Image (cartoon, rainbow, N blue to C red; front, side):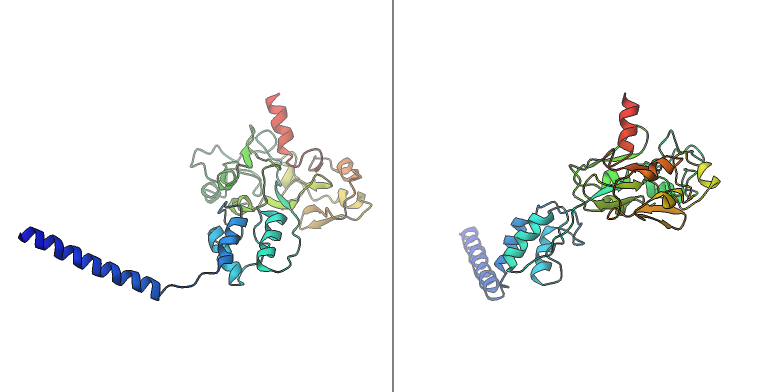
Length: 279
């Protein structure tokens, strides 16, 4: 009988506190905005962080609280932005789709190493070890930080140590660019029109040629050759404005080191090297 009484007493206490918790939850319940769930449904659910928030849920809440732009979901693109705008009853500006591009052609065949590296396969770690093992201080280390950072499997390592970007899979989230300690990955407008200088070197002349066979030497020959004035110098590096470039190709003819390539030929120049290596 004592055991029975104890069971009944414990059951009664449990039921009482359960009732109290239920009443407290109902009394202190915070009303939620139904639009949050609708926005969550509109988002791709990648939780990649490209919107500057921890995940899609946090981004949806930030939109409701007017702390985030409607077009902040880069992977979702224009369709997602328009869907969110419809939920919010607002208009949204169009966002130009972008993709990642690797601004380096200094692979294992063209770029010289200062020493043989046997450390951790991490670009950040290698960069801290005597400034990296590449003779070019701005060249790709090829240890795959960008590959590991991509949540969409849009980047892979080529056979000669340069990352390759699959434009059909790239969402332009920019996480690969953030993961690169040498800032050689940048976002460019989606498409294949125009030419680009596939180099990030801030050295010039013989300093470049001693470390890489395909680096920009800052000679300005391409600048003088461009009839559209689409090429300018940023320090010792030539940079092409895709809005002005008309694909005439005169810059390619003047570049003695092959630093300039048309995007239509290869949006990621290392892809051509990959095909050549596997042939």
